[in-house]
Amino acid sequence: MLERTDLPERVDIKDVSPRDGLQAEPKVLSIDERVRLVDSLTAVGVPHIEVTSFVSPKWLPQMAGAEEVMSRIERKPGVTYAVLVPNPKGAERALSTQPDELTVFVSASETHNYKNVHRSISESLAGFHRIGEMARGEGVPVTAVIVTSFGCPYEGRVPVNAVLDLAVRLESMGIADITLGDTVGVANPLQVAEMVHAFAMNAPTIRLGLHFHDNRGTALANLLAGVISGCTRFETALGGIGGSPFSPGAGGNLATEDAVYCLQEMGVKTGIDLDRLLGVTKRLEGAIGHNVPSRLYKAGGRMVPVGIEGTFNE
Ligand code: ZN
Image (tube, rainbow, N blue to C red; front, side):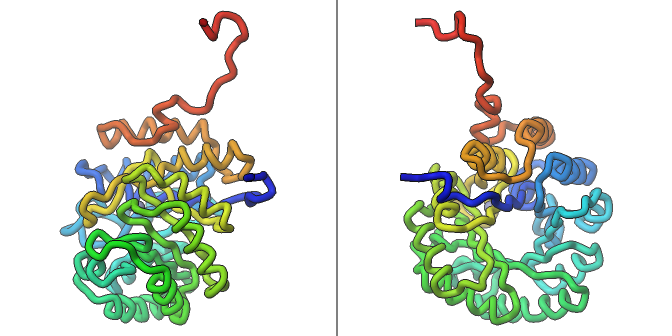
């Protein structure tokens, strides 16, 4: 039986909608709209935000003007503003904007890494060495995401040990803050629990985060499995938008609203004002021009207590 004491007091939610979300949208949002999204997330209490990525605008026009976005957002003390970098060149651009955190990414499977960034895993790690040196020089911490950690569209199920070994290699390079991404949304709750336990047993100094996609409807169940297993750091996206444009069939991220609703209804704090967050979802929907997948948003938010009389017609 699940009891309140099985759950943590608080979890850290990192909203990745301004990057992971918007980069998958066909419509390119203006710099103004992207800045407003980040500022709105800050205003409703999101403690950790992935603001943008420093990829070439040739590849991802959705992320063009990353420097300007970073210079115009209003930074609130206590909030972590992270940016994604694909290579040392991107890191150089990113570091000029004084981010709180640089995030690098690598796939758990060779085929996906090659298709995604045209490099082997070892070549990616060599690039991280250089990025680590540059970031250390500026006093900026580096975090990593291991994508396809729970399954690869080309290689299938990824063994726990392959993910663990890669994470340990990253930690030996000074990157101990590692998020496992279920890039194509194939993970199940038991697999998540086994992964979190394997990390706790074999690499307890790694600060583990989880990032789920909802292609097959398992994302929220996977988050709960992660929480019960002791993980307290999760990446979600407002509205449930996003998913990698480079992963065939990749679907939306777990919606921040849905995760926050589930956690807060169980008494787990996130620091996020859910009602006001839904106002931000409404504006996001207007900006991207289509409905978002978030279930809570569709349901109209939390259940409002109704009057006794005349409500439940039999
Ligand atoms: Zn994602």
